Image (cartoon, rainbow, N blue to C red; front, side, top):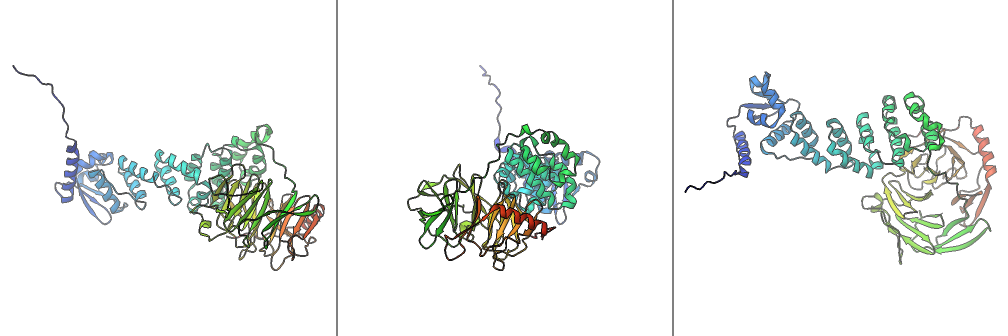
Length: 548
């Protein structure tokens, strides 16, 4: 009796791979090749049927009456021979070696030859290698080839390294379309990121204002104005000359400008009047405070570490902060603490202090030490030439930002509610800069009139004031941000440069003589009168444009 069996489909898994491998061998040996590929310096053989099976580009070439069909010769004069060879090898083997050096040219060739699998491998390689050095190139490639697979890795990288990347030369040299694409990736970042995007747009346009000024409107359209505080729209955006010149920019913000009710930001904090002054007697390591109400000195605490010459002592929100070398100390509730980025400040029995930066920060090597500390809002900023470290007092988190003040040793600082101002320093005696406390973008200001280092500064009623300088120790200069000008407060001279400057109900100058606890004070009303008189006397004031 015959036994009937059901047919069974069988597959040899290695068959297709074997055929592909055999075809590759034939190509390498020049056997049965019916197509010649010419580059600028090489000749390659291939099989027409293999090229057609792998690519619609080659299929169209040989299906229609084109020169290549008749001659059997394909020319790639504008593509590097090594790139063409990689593409042909991929067609025969499905394998390719991708590197940072060849990925862009390889993707260009893959797109031209319509090899989607090769193009996808290039995208995978790029997504795994997003760095500050490659980010601008990836943005351009993603925009040109509409590679959506790159959107997420680029977006994640930009959110994490926003302030660093936006200040690179590569970003500043991008065209308007890649910049627009980059800003669109950052949608959904919230109010703070929207303000950062505004600063990025201004920086990019001002990098080449004659050419890029007309492209400002295209980038302005990307901003989500509903996320910006009404106060920011009125006091910052509407005062920008690029906006004032453009009707297309003014129209979309008119409804926000007219309606104060949309601003959901909290009311501006009133500045707290200082109740005491804090200094340290380095010989004894004793930190002392001067009570402004009762006008008496008292001991506060003994500093547990080693105070260097550049040590900065700061009292803020009932806490004491000491920056010395590249270490940070905090004193609160009679206990010293120390910490590092991303971690809560911890109790430290020995309290030797901890480097507040990570291994990638220049401070970690000891090349740069904290020159100045200053408090703005809920943060304490520690400033060096190469970086800015921010301690959030609420979360106790320390963060390192790659932007630094770019000033020489012995620079000095003050701050408004939104910006940190830094001045002078060794070999940068005339220089002045500002750093936005939100975006961490640094801008160059008009140069000071008199050279200054080892000086001091304070902020009063919208202006910055500077003391000090080796050649002009008693000169007081005033900087007006709205006009970007300096003028000398001629009638307001001090007998000696102070060691510390504080402002509360009066202006206090501390130290600067043999005794650190020597204090002189001045009436703020008198300061207002002198400033008004000297600003009028200076007429156009002193304005020396900063140079890089």
